[in-house]
Amino acid sequence: MLVFKFGGASVKDAKAIRNVSNILNDYKEEKIIVVFSAMGKTTNLLEKINLSIYNKNESEFKQLIKELKAFHSLILNDLFKDSAHPIHQVVESKIQKLYGLFDQLSSENHSLNYSKIVSYGEIISTIIICSYLESKNISAQWLDARSVIITDEKHEDTKILWKETIKSYLKNISDVFLTKNIIITQGFIGKNERNETTTLGREGSDFSAAIFAYCGDAKEVIIWKDVPGMLNADPKYFENTVKLDSISYREALELSYYGASVIHPKTIKPLHNKQIPLYIKSFLNPKEEGTTIQGSKEKDALIPSFIFKHNQILFSIKPKDFSFLVEENLSDIFDRLARVNAKINVMQNSALSFSILLDRKKINLEKILSLFKDDYTIRYNEGLELVTIRHYDQKTVDFVTKGKRNILEQKTRQTIRIVLKPNH
Ligand code: ASP
Image: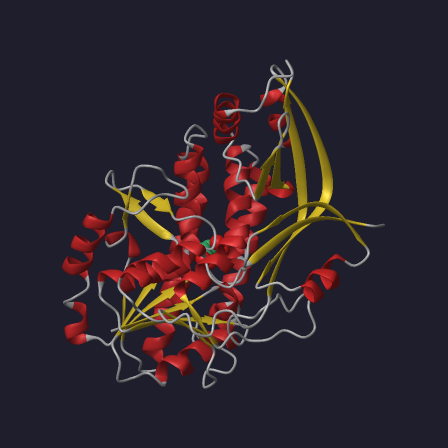
């Protein structure tokens, strides 16, 4: 059995979906679980819909639903020219259900509502794609991922309950392969033991693919992307990127942990645990080699890889009473940060000051300042960049720091991380 994952960009319009269908046609003889994301940027739109419900802004809600409907109708009308095809009605009824949620959801359990609403993106994309494949004589079975992926209580960024998930995998999947070769399912979503929809965190569909692969002892996983494989830098910022042909699980984990956006960091562990190889391939050139991620470390140390994070904010936190930073007040600082779910990109301390670097877009600045104002003095520096270089050398360091002020630097033998202030 193989597991494929197609992200939002690979199903962003009718042409892209036809391309996915051609790729699947090339694997006709295989048993495959195919995990899909929502189409294009649908999840962002659904997050706005969720916010409009939270803010009780009905006119905005209606406008956003209209946008969602128009986007999917464009794709549907292109793929299914016959307006009497039942898929039009099926999608319409899903959108009507979503529409009804404005009056049904109380704004109390924000996180439960969030998962319920954003899951519509993946549900709608998979019913359209499955129906399209059938129309092309590719026999596929639609599967609700929530019947397999069982999570803990938390609704967002939730944890997998592995024992329960393996059990429901065996119950719900094995028989399907007796009659069908392809199972179409959703990434990103699961359910908890109270039968409520939960989500695995943004970009979590890669992780879903790894969960299915782990449970079914897959032969391999292919994540289909709009890039030729894992590159040593983001082609948006670098002209001369190099494809990493083959890297180890460990290297892939390090790169994704530091922020390489090609794969979600949680994807690697389940695959490593069962030694299932992961291939990153281009859906634009499906015959090309791509990147292989597997156990061997042989080729790891060859090329410097760069990961940039823009729009960073550096906080420096000092105890007001001039006390040393020791375990006690450090744990107090962590405790306060955990309360606002702050994700630290870099941290460093001196005798009197603790510095943390955070993504400016992911925090509420006022909240963080007020969180510390009783016992600490807190200062911040905005508009920074964080660059991480794996397998660095002086030449690459000089190249990325040129014309920028070095604010903070951390080095190990293999990785350097530098916080930079661009000179304007
Ligand atoms: N659709 C979700 C997102 O945009 C999950 C995913 O695509 O991986 O984050």
